[in-house]
Image (cartoon, one colour):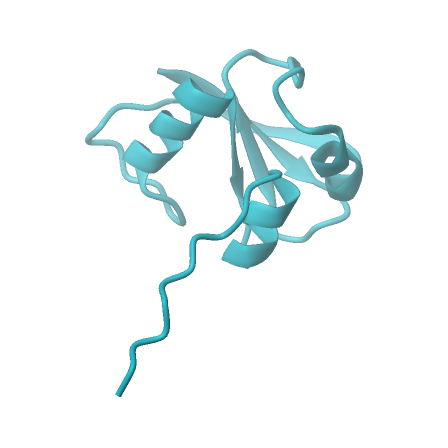
Amino acid sequence: MKTFIYRGTKKPDSYLYIVRENDFSAVPEILLKTLGKLERAMELDLHSEKKLARADVNNVMQALEQDGFYLQMPDESEKLALAGKKPVSSPVPRL
């Protein structure tokens, strides 16, 4: 699976993976505004045995197929909020 990776200028260490070069139509508008200007970082061919530095390749491929994009950010809760998703929380165990 081919992916194009863009770096956000407003969020350090934020990377947006998309399936088609310069096609941000699947990305929520609020996310695009928050990331700022997007600069192309690289193009990769993803497959299940590919190693990525900060993401699980299978999660990336699944998000690309389901949502049309994958957002890589250092803070998981911020990433979910920007992508328009709610974090799934586990109930607090009772003692």
